[in-house]
Every structure is written in structure tokens, then in C-alpha cells.
Image (tube, rainbow over all chains, first blue to last red; front, side):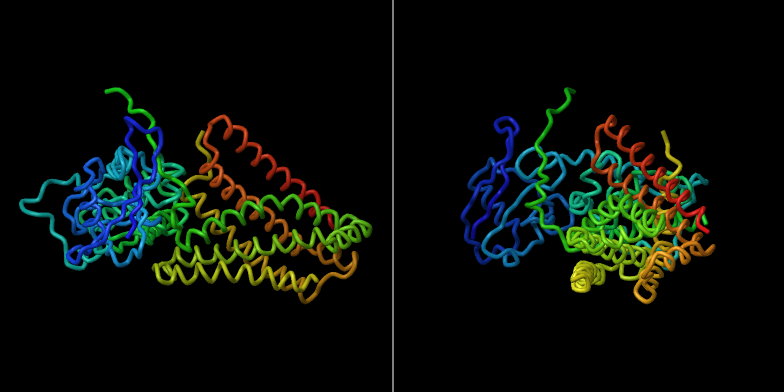
Length: 231
Length: 126
Length: 111
């Protein structure tokens, strides 16, 4: 099959170019990442991020045939005869398929991704009922691969001001956590023109999430929390 | 640390495969802008038709003009798409059809229904 | 400058006006389909009724508010230079207010 890969070396190129490779998948190669790694074995200038190679770490998120996904859990046979691989859209490219995620993580940190409770530390753990814990299902599983945020037009136009779907999913994950005591400040922080309300519920985020999470639904729930608080 | 040079960003919309909901969404925006641009015309036609019998006759003749009819069909498409997509959003707000499978179906429905309504309007005009 | 219509408030205004406009437009489509005004006198006497005047005036207020929130959203996404925004935003707001006043002086005196 043919694999077209975006190549860009900031020290030599002023813009990216596509490089074509011919490669025949071998029987033991099931996922797209296997092919890319074999290509890298032949051409070690090809640059990408990968670590766990099984959809847990989130480091090999790239744009595959126009759609964001994890190379390590994208089956080769789902690709057909041709795969076009590009870096995540909307993020500055460091080299080839590697993007700069600084802005993405800034937005993530800005929503305070940790339980806030100013009360005294309990002797042991902070207890949570099984029912309250269940409310975090579909929220905590995010691996911060940035597939969603990089596919979000609202983030493309305002990456410095709009938190983006990954950050907002985590914002809701802590709003929904029975142990968190910071609800008011969290909601206040999101109630402005940009941080939450740039979302137009396009749902590209939910479309591409490799963990089948629904950031768009989390965002809708935050808006409902804000509305309920105001009315 | 020196500021990094401005880097290449991949954002070629022709090379990004947008899901059907994205099409519904951008058409919601396009139709909204079209409708907003039409507000002065609608206001003018409304005021003129109420001013006096000559004004009413002017607007009736204006609406029968083929060019205006074409614009009116476009306007009806924009209104239909904007209303249907808006209803879809408001239902999604309260958790009706917000799951991906339903959202895809409703996106297709909105995109197609608005075009069908515009075709029906065109049929009624000619 | 922080606008009054931001965040949750803008979002709520967009939805409340949307609901009003939806009902308003469905009512008017029905009215025009089943009782299309064929001449000036019918049209004018219809439009001059007190409750119709109120409905239409409220309709224009809802429409202009809805258009403002929507157009501002579009401009915040695509109009990047602050200088261009400083021109575009007041221009659009002014145009919408002018249309609102125009409709007020058109509708209010109808008898």
C-alpha cells in the first residue's frame, strides 16, 4: 500500500511537503503504527511520538486520511490502499508528525485539573460513594491525546482563549466530582465570551475521540449547570 | 530562551475530513449570516408594503420579479436550515439526541430537509 | 471593554429569542399560507391590530438581539485584528439599532 507522510524539518524547510512510501503490511503488523515504525527503521529522519503503542498514552495522535486518531489503534485494514498522514491540525509543527502541545496543556492546566477542597485534610482518603463515583464514568478516561481539540474549529480560531474540548471535558470531570468544593469558582471562570462559550456544538470532538468519550455532551452539561445556577 | 520561530501549522480545510455535523454547523453559520444580511431588505419590504397602496403594489410586483424569486428561494433555504439546525441544538442542550449516533442522523436530516423545503418553495413560485 | 451580553447571558438570550422567533415565524407562515393579504387595506388593518403590532415589534427586538449575538460570535472567530473589530462591532451594532428604531416608527403609529 501507499503511505503519504507530511515531512517538515524547521532547519531546512520553509513549509511542509508530502513524502510517499510504498510498503506492504506483513502478517504480524495489524496497526498503522507498526507500518510507520517500520518506515522509520528505513528512514530514521522520520519523526513521530509514540510510547505505549496500545491506545493508553495518547502520544501518537495524528491526522489519518483527514481525521484525527491514534496510529497505534487504527487497524491497517481499515485504511484501504492509501493512507495520508499529517500532524494534528491547528497545532504548530515541531517536525514531521510531532506537534507543539504547549497551548493545549496550558488550557488543560487553566481549568485546575485536580480536586479542590480547602477544608482540613481527612485522616485517610476522601470518601466517595459508588453512585457519586459512577458520575465520573465517561469523563476520567481521557488520555489527553488532543485528537478532539485539534479537530475543533472553535479552537482553531481562538486557541489562546477557548479552552477546547479536552480541557472542558476535564473541567466537567471536576465539576461532577462529589469531592470537589470549588464549583462556584470553576463556573465563574468559564462564564465569559471565550473560555466555554466559543463552543458551537459542532461535535467534531465526539466524532474523533479514540476513547469514545463525549466532550460535546460535557460542555452542554456545564452550560446547563451555569443556567441552573443563574435561574 | 529565545522566542521560537513561527512554525508551520497544518490547517488545510480541504484536506481535513469534516463529519456531517460540521457541515450542518457551518451551514448554520452561513445561513445565519445570509439571514442577517437580508434583515434590511425584509424591514424595507415590510415598511414599504404598509406605507400606502402604491407601496403595497410595489412590493407585490417586486416579489414577482424572477431575480427576487431566486433570492427568496435562497432565503427560504437559509431560514429553514437555520431554524432546523437551531431546534436540533436546543434539543441537544436538554439531552435529546445529543449522543453521536442520533446527532449524525439529525445532522443529515437537517441538511436534506432544508434543501427539500427550498425546492418545494421554488416549485410553488414557478 | 466587557460587553453586557457575554457568556451565559448571551447564550440564554440566543435561546430565548430563538424560541420566540420560532413560534413567531411558524405563526406568520401559517397566517400567510391560509389568509394571505390580497390587498393593501386587508394587510394594513391586520398589521394595525394592537396584538399584532406587539407581536411584530417583539419579533423585531428578538430578531435584532439574536442577530447581534450571532454576528458577534462570527466576528470573534474570523475578525482577528483589534482595529478591524473596533470598526466592525460598533458598525453592526449601530446598523441593528437603526433598523430597530426604523421598525418602531413604522409599526407604532399604525392605526
